Image 1 (cartoon, helix red, strand yellow):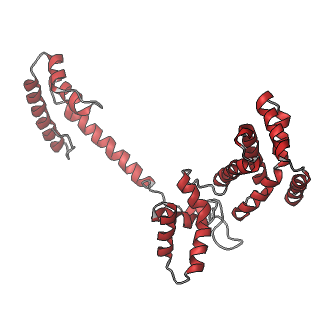
Image 2 (cartoon, helix red, strand yellow):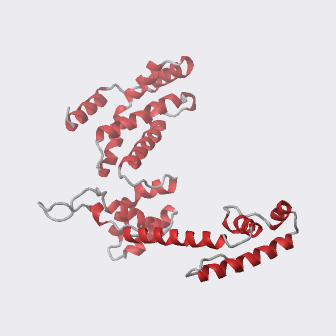
Image 3 (cartoon, one colour):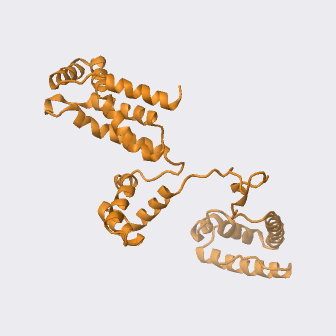
Length: 287
């Protein structure tokens, strides 16, 4: 079944559903809430399917299948039927409208673009009202600048001007596949993803960095071999360990004072600096 036929079938079913009087609506709601009668809940929902179809038409500007919108709206309708309290004296259509609209809005936000927008109430209001407000303001004053329009919309909806600008750009553009070809028909090989700039180092830079790192590591190893066992222990624990030991911790381990550990560390760093310089360069080992 194609989309048009499916939409027609749904619309026909909605129009064929009988209207409910207030008394019938109250009776069905009482059956559902009193005895958990799912048939009563479904009868209320089906009787208001035309409400869902009508509301789906208001979201046609987002380019999504109307049948999908109706299905999402019907989910909201069932939720409303499950929560409806007939004792409050409100007609079901009035109560259900909010649930149907909210379900459709959530569906649009999830599927309109692969880029997810904000889900706060202010961001939702901006998404669904931006086009209408912009058209209304432009019709009132065709000489108003875009910046002034953004500012008025931001003030009206209680959001930042930058949020309005970003949302307007999203609504004005469209998603593009990274696999989409670039260039005219018949041209081979180049896709959008091929033109993305990578911030990683070039292969030769990565190799050069690895070689330099290995050389520095070897020089540091040779320099450390010139230290005494105690000096080596202090430097490795204080400078080369991921979580450097404190002077007190090393003092307790070696059976000496914190001041003595500090003196050993200072002397060992000077010996390392001298050894690295003699070995053809310097490595950053600081106090």
